[in-house]
Length: 83
Image (cartoon, rainbow, N blue to C red; front, side, top):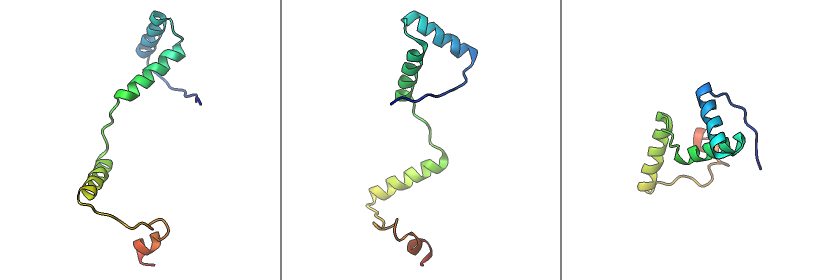
């Protein structure tokens, strides 16, 4: 299944894409798709402090074999507020 996305790029990026399309003989849409797919494989975002803290906490809990309740979704109020 494919999906359409609209984005704005600067003129220099557009020229690079057009040049790639001309030199490879591929349609612009194919070049864009390949560039995005290649970029996603090498993209490693830096998590925000909040996300990093949660990931560190999860790693610590796993390392120390900390487990939580298995019924949290059904007994949320009991655990959160003692109801």
